[in-house]
Length: 203
Image 1: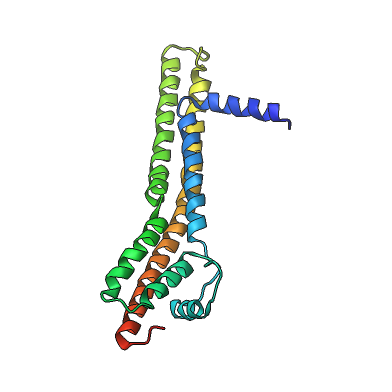
Image 2: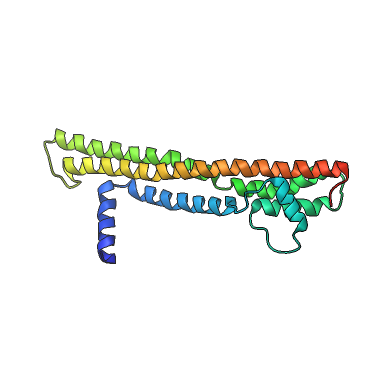
């Protein structure tokens, strides 16, 4: 299939769905940009425990941390090495950037997942109104498509709304679960470093 044919088919599909289709396409692009960002921030290759990562962090001489937890380990060890007073507050302040990063765009993803089916429902209502209007006028075909055009618009917008929302909901929940796990690991890093500082064992 040539590019021109694809563009023609896409334009026809969008026209059949009515005015709701373009906002839904825009929402799809924004949704998957946000999901891609969250995936890049939340992904990690090392599934070791926090204590193991702390030990690796102490032995690591150079190199860039692979993920956000390793970056937090490196920053936490750097702060704790100076044996500062009020270590917990310093760690809370230093880790606030990590907390912001792992939660960024989470609300945006959830909002689009909620709004997309409702936008599809709006198109469904518009399509059914066109269908009823055509039936009332005994007009199977009109400038806007008549009964067939109304039903087509109703079905296509419903389909599009669900096609945006369902994958976004599934992937979004997986990423939310990963976010909660990382948040717990960040708290564990602070707890361990503070407890070691209290025992005088921080390297």
